[in-house]
Amino acid sequence: MGNQLYDVAIVGGGPAGSTAAALLGRTGRRVVVFERDKFPRFHIGESLLPFSMKAFTRLGLHEKFKAAGFMEKFGGEMYGACGEEGVKFYFEDGFRSQTDRSYQVTRAEFDKVLLDHAAENGADVREETAVEKVDFSPDEVRLHVRGKTSGPAEVRAKYLIDASGRNSIVSAMFKLKKTYQHLQKISIFAHYAGVVREQGRDGTLTRMVRAIDRWFWVIPLTENRTSIGVVLDAATYKNAKLSPEEFLDQAIAEQPLLTRRVAAAERVTPVSVAADFSYRNSRIVGDRWMLAGDSAGFIDPVFSSGVFLAVLAGEQAADALHIVLDDPSKRRRLFAHYSRSINRAMDVYLRFVDAWYSKEFIEVFLHPQDRFQIPQAVNAVLGGNVGTSFAIRWRMSVFYFIVWLQKYVPLCPRRTLVPQNGNTAFIPEPAEAIS
Ligand SMILES: Cc1cc2nc3c(=O)[nH]c(=O)nc-3n(C[C@H](O)[C@H](O)[C@H](O)COP(=O)(O)OP(=O)(O)OC[C@H]3O[C@@H](n4cnc5c(N)ncnc54)[C@H](O)[C@@H]3O)c2cc1C
Image 1 (cartoon, helix red, strand yellow):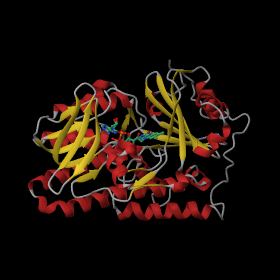
Image 2: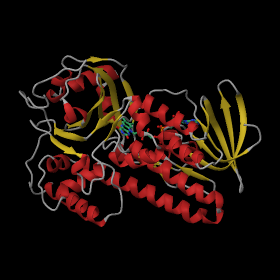
Image 3: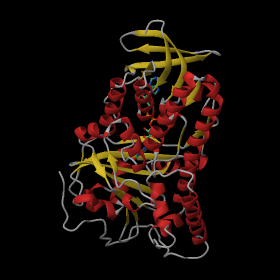
Image 4: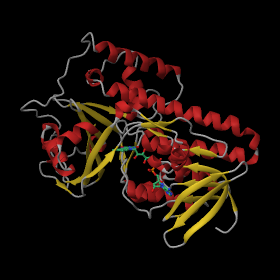
């Protein structure tokens, strides 16, 4: 690394950091990525959104995803825990849909493909090297890094992208993090083999089961591996006084919609716990830095928006810096534009997530009325359409209005979200166990 001055230094080799590094590297910028772990390493966040497909095309990643064997996914399905039937949605039916698919991925492999791709595109990738401290001066950024084998070093760069995830180094330094008190959730999850699954395109869908005080995900990852997790208030979990294994087993056992799926399945990973508190930073750009991905903010895992937002931010940060490196006078305008764009995308999900945690959301969602293309607009947002299109915005406003009205007037059937005996749904015909 010596004393050279990099154009851009990136902290973190997750989807946000790797995306930015690949795009900057391929334009010939001197870019360095510091990743404290050695990839592949486990990470949660396995269900991707179709609105990332354009970025993957731009990055030239589809062939690599194919070679890695990532499953293509075509939509999702939502259930109320008390119900018999879920509502499926396919990405191809989304409002002005541009693609019918996305991917389900094991993040260990996915993140490695992305980071290796960044290196192949010219980025200087340093794994097992943690950034311990950064100093900013008017002209440059100094990073104090420590390699597992190479020891401490100092590195200089013109700009910094902090893509270090939930424990963002710059956010901690400037105390920018604001947590959402009403979204203090916890997730408990594991991978299973032998979970019952449909054949064909329905076997690729992400399933969600909404119960009264929690929700579950069921994400098919590979032919024989399925990710299952439960998300609930952190306080409820704490009060249960159960180990993560006991809690997950019990939570699944209480849901007939899930138990039939896992009857012959076997857990193949340890049970993990992630406190998935949602938060935003009060600023996501400074004179010499940009925050990207979880480092900028995280809005609940329910709509699988994390990797989409990380890739979007990585892409937009790289595009802005590419221009600013040639013409620093454009920095203020382009950084402000980046900040608005990423915050607006997070706003879209925040509103969606707030609605999701009301019982009325699922009552309305499970009773779709094909009027004014509102289900199609909701489908598009579920797919990652966070654009400024008026056509989507007014439809979403009507959707939120219906969800609000449902509280007072039962426009759609009421649901208890409490499992009923004899619930037979969620089992494909003919049932097939994949092991
Ligand atoms: C329970 C749960 C379920 C989720 N499910 C989904 C889902 O289905 N789909 C989805 O899209 N998203 C999901 N997410 C969100 C997703 O995990 C994240 O949004 C996504 O990984 C963000 O990518 P990133 O690149 O910003 O950060 P990360 O992927 O966290 O990458 C940050 C990297 O920075 C490195 N790093 C950190 N500090 C340093 C340092 N000081 N020096 C060097 N390196 C450092 C870390 O090792 C890490 O590799 C879920 C999240 C949770 C909590």
